[in-house]
Picture 1 (cartoon, rainbow, N blue to C red):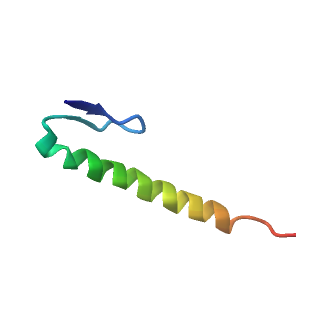
Picture 2: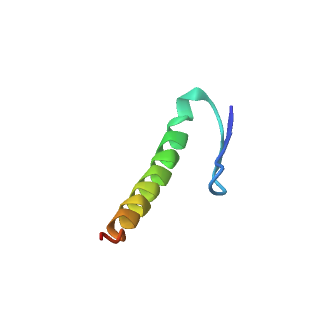
Length: 47
């Protein structure tokens, strides 16, 4: 099996038994996205 991240240079080639590395990598991107989204929400100007 192969995996290439669309957001960075991370790539993986292995078996189902080692696929957890891909899951951990995707969690890293989700965390970064969540932080960015929360920062954007804090910058909203209320009228």
